[in-house]
Image (tube, rainbow, N blue to C red; front, side):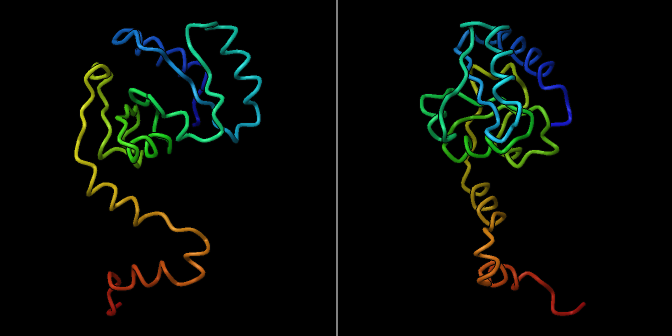
Length: 149
């Protein structure tokens, strides 16, 4: 994230509390090597006022979720695909910008834009290594590449 995560978390929790008393669940990045230490620090600092997600899969963590809050990360994309509104602080670098909101004051009444065009755009941006190797990617994009260079 290239920012101090602890400072950002303190700041965003304070902002959320200005606009909502809903429960807050924090989902730590599963690939973060310092995840366990971070969780201990968060639990010590916030006690039972927040919960830490123990879900292995982000989709499980999103069940009964009101909205997501993040800087610009992929979980906001997953949430949007699932129909859950998302607040993002860095719209210039988020793939969810087209369907997210950037005014935290909208937390209790988040906008719910039509996601159809955005989902089509996102679906065409993600390709697995197998799809690239098999030629699926080339087949999908070759029509958009000009034959005159």
